[in-house]
Length: 296
Length: 331
Image (cartoon, rainbow over all chains, first blue to last red):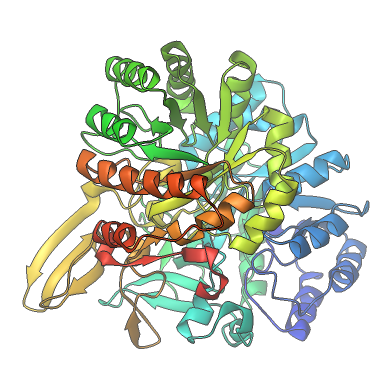
């Protein structure tokens, strides 16, 4: 059966909010949970030991736990944390940049790659398979047609590398060392007062004609519309997708997971709309169109 | 330090070489490189002429094949690598891991440089690219501060090239999908950011408006100078405030930092702008040549000639320059 994963929390939530979120998630019908801070090194509400504690609870609840690494590795401190993640033996690593690829592969640790790592062709997958790659995520800007070809080529090469598709949530579109939340508050990044905590689902950036374009989330920029491929699940099953990723939001996530679970089991028609908090839907990337587009 | 200049056309290539570039970089007329513009770039014949001209004048030529091929385009991209090799290019500037692997196995004797699109922001990432693909040099992202570059340079297993002047990307290059979210093209897929085909200008009662695929990027009042609607440089609304919410339309200029870059052991400074005119390239190359020559004569006494900054500011977006992330406060 198609697997469901919970992506890493891309927002900055308080320590208690994170613990509560995963205490609930332990009960949800997801197969895989990605844990860790992937956006900003200044977000330290949870230490690695905290993440490992949550990992233990989820593992006991029968989930596969994967430790996600920071997307932009810039400082020696970033590397120190990365080395600690890449020296444990209990969990699979989600490598989100080449630093993580290097440390995981030289430590002979199996790893998967997240959607921010550029995998656009099978030659790239073959290189990484030799270094310990066990699965991979389709970059968010790629769509159905490319994925069909990638899966077909993998099969032809005799490579068993399960594919994961980001299927629900605000799309992570860009990373910077500059902080756009701090910029909004006229604060220097190094003294940002952790304002991201006040925006558990980001700061909405609109055009001057009130179109919701992006969500500013610290050093990362996400889509202003919510990607939703719920209705594509039957198609994804047919094409051989292994896992679909649901990106955490601090409200309504239990219902989202439940709906995806019901659809993958064929218990309800996939055409039933998913009613969650207000945000325009989009699915353009899947059809090779501008990502913000919504194809009816 | 080597001066690496952009060449979007044969006249621009000659202007760069004539004005002191140690190396020029170019791309083919298709989406295999990150500056796909109409009327820009080289076919094989023009590239051969350019390489001959550069080599005759003691300059090297690098070929950028730095976008990310998908299965349907794979053969076009490997053909670009083959063409560059046949033409006798001095180095290939690559980003995609699959393509790096292809170039390393087919043409091990031709230098491979990691493109800025390869997004290597740590020495461990550089080690990955060196160990797996034998890269000789890496171009560093414009998001790093001077302190971060110092830490990286200390342990780097490869030569480093940094951006010195030109347009400023605010996002980690190679991992920015903002353009394909608004249009259907991105630097990674098509070598285009905020592509010209999606741009519309409209004079309205509220002012001059720039749009990208219908989205209002900016609106200019009387007397305001309008810039190309690169989507991260527009004015948007956040919680009721309208401002340059992501980035101001400014250019990068690091000429003041040359002594520090040299001290860190940086091998080359790179000028952005293959989309620029030959006259622009000539002015920029000449200015940077003078600066590098002065640095070479006496690093201790290096001082920026005010005329250099005047020239460079005059060539910059909005007449404004910044040393970007090199100065940490900017963040």
